[in-house]
Length: 351
Picture (cartoon, rainbow, N blue to C red):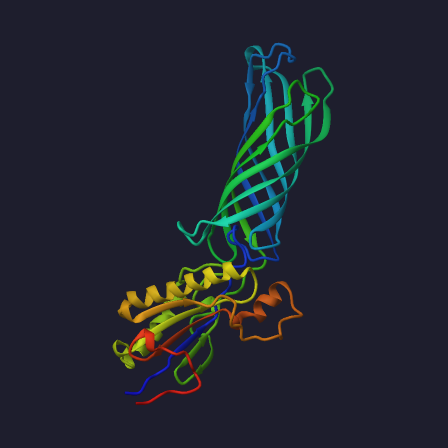
């Protein structure tokens, strides 16, 4: 029987950022948010005839961020926290505090892959430069600029390569002002983020190279950037592979699925990513009728690049594009048992 080697070299985008989700590192993103703002610690004896405090208002803001590493980003944001109103008899206003400002925070993210490849949890912390204005009837208003600590905890869910959503709770501690109290503020907001560095996904039929017993497809056919769940286009590409496996009678061969990543990111993270993506491919092959007992899954991480030194002078999006051939999954079909497999594409053996 002739032993056949079948390799599917599929570029895999290495997961170069977390947390957010899901945003590629060394890229910028922008977003906006809207939600419910509430002031705390608002009681005061300094407001004449104050009978009621209205401390709930619609809030929101906008932000721009830079994803520096797979886990860390920096964000510059503007937040409108709304108004804190003191009312007296007959609901007349006896005082009003308005608060808004600019924040600079560091953002740390981590993927919740056990729930979904598209879901990240993140935390932000930094400084909030707030501008407050206190006004009372028959008095001139006064404004003050001060700095308070700001913290936030949230979830980021990636919708596609370009957009993600976030749900976060932000806390600003003790906003000093010329008014009667130094309130805290909590802002529960829903936001949408647009990433400037997302790759463009090609069509499933966009083959880079085809020759005997080898198929080479662009990475983004199989997966969204930074993810390990197969896209619809990836399933279509693997359907063609399944048809080829049927032709060579895989019931008499062993199938090895090997994941590879590029060099961006840590070795340990890339190792896990290569294993997860190889496992996704293996799971789909099984779902299409390939016997699970014939498939072995391996992750090579970033240890076997094929681009050499040609990408060394590049950075950012240009570097990711250049390293695309390194991001791949190879599927080898060879020998009768997994133990007999020796991955060697230089020749076919015949017995």
